[in-house]
Length: 230
Length: 317
Image (tube, rainbow over all chains, first blue to last red):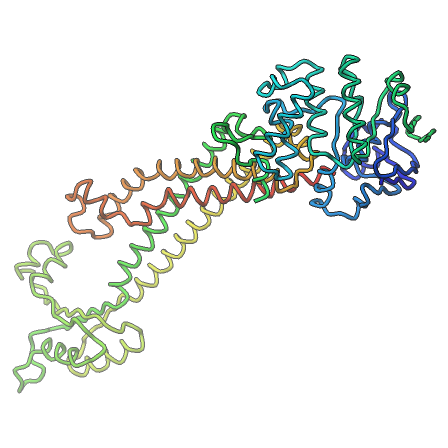
C-alpha cells in the first residue's frame, strides 16, 4: 500500500535546510493525496516538468516530503531510522530515466548489486542474474561495461537491476524511452508479470500509445499537483 | 561488518566486485606520501622519547643515590693519642650505616684522574702542593633529611667533612626529561592531527569523485555502514602503507642518531662495536616501530574515513 497524505515537496525549503537535493527552481509538488493498493498498477503521466520524477523520488526515498506524510509498503519512512529506510529501499526497484549504471562494473555485477546488498548466496545470484539477462537478450553481454553497451542495452540492464530482487514496489521513469517497440512490449510484459505476482508497479511515461495498449489507472500531474487519478 | 555484503565472496577465478570503484581509482599517492612523512616524524619523536627516558634512567639511577663525602686533611689522626686517620674513621662510620652501600675511598690515582682537568698531570703524581681532601663515595639515601643527620655524625668524627649528593642534578635531569617527553608527546599529537586532517580531506575528495556511485548504491538500499566500511578499509590500507614506509625510512636515521647517542649513554666501546654491535644495542621497541606506526596509521585512517563518510552520508535522504 502506498498512501500520500497532503504531501508536498518544496525544493527551496530543502535548500534552506542545507539539504540541496534537487533543483531549487523546480516547482516541486503540492498537496498530493492518493492511495495505491498493494499489487496495484499505475501509469504516471504529465508534461515535462510536471513533477513525475519528483514524485517517484519521494517514493524511492531519495527525497523527504517537506509537508504532509507518506506511507510506503505499510511503513512511515519518517519514523524509520537510516538503517530502516535502507532496508525499505531494498524492497523498491527503480528504473531511472538515465539508467544510473555503475561505469566500472560489468553487466553482471551491475545487475547483481541489489542481491549482494541483500546478502544473497553467490551461487543463487549467479543463477538469477544470468537467467534474467538471458531473458532480456543480454546473455552475451555479461562482462561488458556500460560504455560498451548501446542505449537500449543499458536500459535493459537497468531494468534487470530493478527487478532482479523481486521488489514489492517497482518504479520506472520512462523505462521504454530507448527501446524499440518489440523490446518495449517485452519489458511491459515483464512488468505485468511482476505485477501479477504481487509487485506494485508505477511507470512514468510519455508514451500514450503504450498507455492506451496497456490500460491501467493513471495518476496525472500538472505543475506539481495531482489533477487526475483513475 | 556491514560492508561485506557488497564485497561478497564470489566463485573462484573472478575478482571481488568493487561497487564504489575504490580499487579502480588510482592509489592516492599523496595520502600515502603525507602519512609516510608524518610517520617518519612520529618515529623520530617516539625514538627521542625512548632515548630520553633510557638516558635519564641511566643517569638518574647513579645521580639520585650517589653520596660524595670529602674529608679534609684525611691522613691526620682523629685524636692526638690515636693512630686512626680521619678518613679511616669516617669510612668505618659510614660502613656501619645500614642505609649505605658500596662505601669506598677513591684511591689517589682515581682522585688524580678526577682532578686532572683542573690540576693537570701534577694531580696524579701528588705534586700539586695543594692539600687535597680524601674522597669517599657511597650509594644510599640521598634525601636532605638523611644527609643532614649523616653530616652531623661525620663532623663529630672528622670536623669539616662535607657531603655532596646527586639530588640537585637528579631534580634538574628529571625536569629536563619531563619537558623532552612532553615535547615528544606534543609532536606525536600534532603529527596524528595532521595525518587525520589529510585523511579527512582525502576521503572527502574521494567521496566527491565517487558521488554518483555512492548515490546509486545508497538508492539500492545500502546501509550507511555498507558504504563507509569499504572506504574505511581502503583508506586504512593506504594509511597503513604510508605508516610502514615512514617507519622504515626512519630506521636508518634512528640507527645513526643512536650511534651518536651511544657516547652519552656510556655504552662501553660504542664507537668500536661496528654495525652489528650497534644493531644489537637497538631496543626491541625501535625495531617494532614501523609495524606499530603502520597499525596506528591504519587505525587513524580507518576511524577518520569511517566518521567522515558517515557524516557525509547524512546529506543523503
